[in-house]
Amino acid sequence: MFRRSHLKILLIGNSGVGKSALMNQYVNNRFSSRFRATIGADFLSKEVHIDGRTLIVQIWDTAGTERFQALGTALYRGSDCCLLVFDVTSLYSFQALEKWHKQLLLQIEPEEEPTFPIAIIGNKTDLENREVSSEEAEMWSRLHDATYFETSAKTAANVQEVFEWAIRAVLKNRRVPEEPELNSVHLETKPSEGTHRERCGC
Image (tube, rainbow, N blue to C red; front, side, top):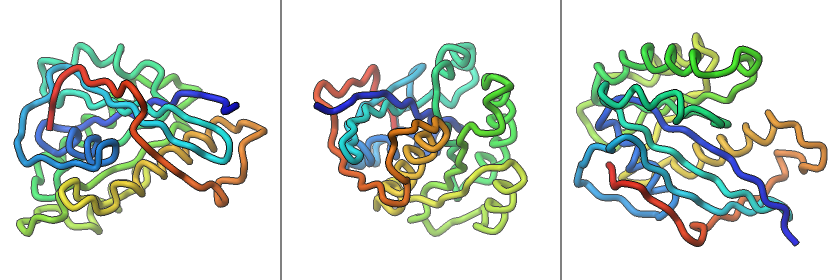
């Protein structure tokens, strides 16, 4: 019988950067160009099999607008990893990462800060009107002790890799003795039964 455990991955960043699109592409292998702002929060679950263990991964997409920031404490609670997302065609969304990062650190317990997995995601690389270079984003990420990825939710470029990194980083951070070596982990994923959405977002 499989052992089950739950992981919570949080997506934060400005409205319109593609958080919901990344989540939907990873869980459902689907992309929609229609944009509807997330209301409060939204999540999808996905079942991930890792060498005899079954993990239920909950991916939370948070609203990127100021009027929903009061929900922050409840949404951050219990998170195992955070992905800070910006749009490579929007300098404003990149500059806002500083605010999001500070807010994240306020929510993380002090003893968790050195090891809490954080990645910076530059999304929408399929678009041509780029305003943020890879070098600039990588430098910002290194200064904030975060791993940097570039993705396209539309073409699915690097989407699988981002979430695989997040899952492996959480397992490494938990230091569970019976876990296999991470470099030998084989990920086999499928949407979990009863996949849940509270609201639709893009």
